[in-house]
Image (cartoon, rainbow, N blue to C red):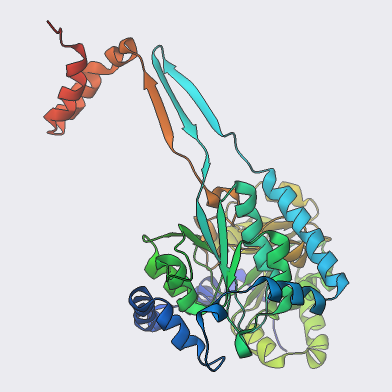
Length: 433
């Protein structure tokens, strides 16, 4: 059998460790190599990008590094009207959802009489979006990264994506970039693209924050430039956990399980259920469909290395396991999914009920598909409006307000050995002649 059910209570320590660690990207093996690339780009700028791009086109020029208006127009001619309309529908929903996240531009509270404190909301000036393009094109990622930045009010949004033969970019990706409102698109992928946005190259502008998923080379580059720029959460191979009870539809679960496994050889698909019957049915359905699956090399790897069907003794054990797993995608197929939702602490994006498959969120329901993987949902959230804004604080103190704090501030400043801090407060209460 491709996958056999196993009880959570019967997992040994090595199996449990394998499940929890699943396909986490180990960037240590590529870190030094990527750091060399990043430093090359930092020092050599456009010259390094041109040299790297030489494998895609002979006599590559600076102009080849950026998508121009003609390429955008031609892309619309190459993409079917149905795909264009689908991208527009998805874009509208993503815009609607992320616009709802917008906070007040300013708020303040009176701490006590004479002391007012508050916070501003201000967009980042320039954001760089990384769009993967190795195994496949991901126009949906353009929508998911550019649209929230645009809704947040970011002034300048650029994107980098790997180039293909003759320095071309997938036309669907270009149409998506245009629909999303991306200002500029550059044909530079991998660590070169990340470094170019982090440091600027002359052609590619320096950004303030880089967002978007990628392979371990891209992840390593983002970690290396962090501090030079801000980044979103680390992102590795895709993963999903399905939490189900006896009310769930085994056919739906099997379809969802396989849809997750087809992402990548390192993708992780896990079912945890309180029903032995559901577990057995799902395994049997996967076994039945396996001979006709496309892209066998991907399924062979993801199903055998990172996919599990687990049986919990009760719903409490199932939920505890779910929270420990802290999945990128979590599907809840229980009799009352909203009640179950109340007990979930860690997940990137949550899909409730039998008619909320993960692909709905991947493309068009409005929520974001740039999500934390590898248990990072314990401390990171998916991409949102919050990733594109800063929140500086402000305060106003009247003389009487400062007088209320005078002794407190002076005492603490002197306790920390900073007499000039204390003096800055005392000076405001010295009688001047």
